[in-house]
Image (cartoon, each protein chain N blue to C red):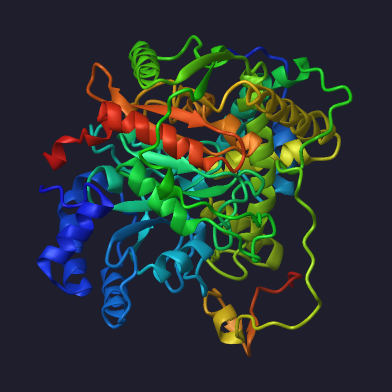
Length: 484
Length: 103
C-alpha cells in the first residue's frame, strides 16, 4: 500500500496535488482504511457517513486552515458530538455525546478530518488493547502481537498508515507505551496543558490527552493545536503555549540528559537495553552531555499507581448505572437491582477488577493504609524528579521494558500486564511531559521506543531533543511491511 | 509475581466490596478476583517500606493549582431533549427507571 500519510506535510501535498475535494479525499481514506484495517482492527467500529458529512462541511467553508482535510483519529473516550463514543465498553452501548471535547473543537477549528471509533482497552484499563469489548487490535509490525495500550487503536492506525495522526489519552503510559511498540511518536503533555473537557474520566489526577504521529515535527504541530487553557476543565493551567514547531531543528549541544540507574533493571529485554545504549551514544555524538541521576522511589511507582488509578476510577465509573445513557439490563426488578445488573452485564473483567481494587482501597479502615499512603509516596516520586531536574534538562529511559508481546500472553496475569507500564507511570504521577520516539528494531524486527521526560511545562525541550535524535538516526522512517 | 501471602482476602471481603461497588459476582468470578486481588495487594505491600513521616500527600501534582470559582450565573446548557437523547428509557421529559420498591 502506497504510504501517502507518512507525514502531515506529505498528506497536505497529496491533497493539493490531487486537487480533489475533502469529500473525495475522505472516500479515498475510507477505502484505504477498509483495506488495511481488516488485518489490524485499529477501529472498534467505523461511521463512514459521519466522516463524509464532516468532509462536506470542510468543503463548504472558504477557510483554509492548517490541518484542512488531514485525517486524524480520535480515541473512543474523547467526545465528538453525535458520534458513537463507547470507551471500548459494553456499558456505553449506543452512547452519542451531545457535545465536543475541547480538543475536538480545536481540531475541527483547524479543519482536520476527524475519524471516530479508535479501539482501546475498556475505559483505558489495559496495556495491550485486549480488554476492548470490540476485540483486540493487532500490531501492524506483527499481527500476532498486541499494539500496546490502552490507546492501541489510535496508535496502530497511525503506524499502519491509515491516518496521518491521532489523539490518545495517557493515564499511566497509554499513549507512550503503544507508540513505543508500534514504532511511532507518542506524546503525553504536562498535566493541565491540554483540556480534559470531554475526555471520559479514568483517573482524573493522572489523565492527559496527547498526540500520536509518524514523526516529531507532526507531533509538535498537533501539540500546538490541542494545547491551551480551557475554563471548562478546572485543572487546565492558564500559561502561554509556546510555538512548539519553533523548537524543531534546534541544536542540542550541551543539553544535559539525565540517565537514571533505576530504569535499567532486571526484566528489561536485552535488545531494548542495547537500543537505548546505542541511542545514548547517538545523543552524545550530537553534543548532548549525559548525567547520571537517581530517582530512588521509582520501584514504588507501579504500586502507587495501582492504588491511585483504581481508586479514582472506581469513583469515576460509579456514574455508569443504566439510568442516563448506555446499557440498561432488562432483567432488573427494582431500581437497585437495575444498577447492579446493568453494571454486571456492562463492565468487562478488567474494569470490574479495578473497580473492586479501588473500592477496597477507599473503603473504611483501609483508606489511610492504601490511598493516603499512595498519595504520600506520590509526593516522594515527584520530589525525586524535582531534585533530578536541578542536574539535568531532560531524562532518558526506555519507554517499555519489552517490545510487543503476543496476544493472550499476559491477559491471565494482571500484575505482569501492569508491570509493562513501569517506566511510563512515574511521569503521570509527577505530572511531567514525556515523549516516546522510535529508536530502532529488536532482533525480531519489532520497534523499540526511547522515552524522554522533562520538567512541568517544558514540552519544548522534549521536542528539541526528540527531533534532534530523530534527524540523526532516522528511525521514524522505518515502517511495517503493510506500507512497503 | 510471587505471592508473599501477606494479605488474606476472604470471599466475604470480595462480596462486601462488590456490594459497595454495585456489582454482584458469581461464584467463579468471586474466586478469581479473590486470588488476583490478593496477589496485587501483596505486591502493593512494598509501599509500607517507604518512610513517609512528615510527607504531605499529593492531591494535585501542580502546587500552583487553586480552587476555581465562577459567578453563580445561569449560562447556556444542554436542552432537555439533548440531555435525554441517550436515555435508555424516558417519559414526559424525565429519565424513567424501574420502581424503587418491589411489590
